Amino acid sequence: MGDGLKIKMYSFTVDCKDPYGLAKFYAGLLNWEIAFHDEDWACIGAPGTAQGAYPGITFQCNPAYQPPVWPEEPGAQQQMAHLDFAVNDLEKAVQYALRCGATVAEQQFSDTWRVMFDPAGHPFCLCGMEAVMESPGFGLL
Image (tube, rainbow, N blue to C red; front, side):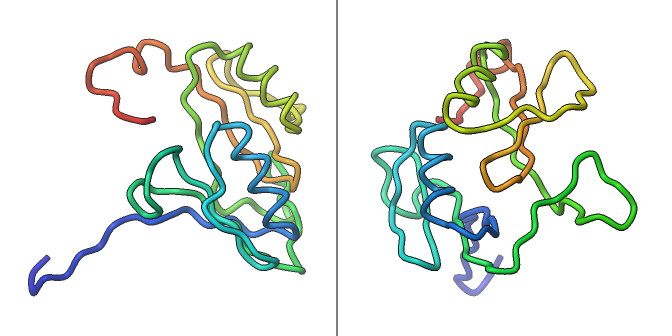
């Protein structure tokens, strides 16, 4: 990029009906902090980082939000994206996510990851990545 232009990923934005409620779920799941919230927006980020220093997750109020159907079905609301989370112990991570308020999808397609739903119905995956997480090149918080 030239001319002093800077582009940096700030956040992944998720539509929902209750931004603060969903921010609390993900902040609890990830042990992150809520950087800000009001009735229309909420944003979470890694602990101890200044807002924008590390990409966060932003939650945007959309009163017409309908949760996607997973797996996909013709004519039903489709997912447009989902979040993947690296975990070092898949079964412990699933149990923790359940305590945070997630649910497990009925259909699963792998023994190395689990499809879960957040309280608003968005799918997300817990991915067993112990070997990757313990490698020296893995930099996620």
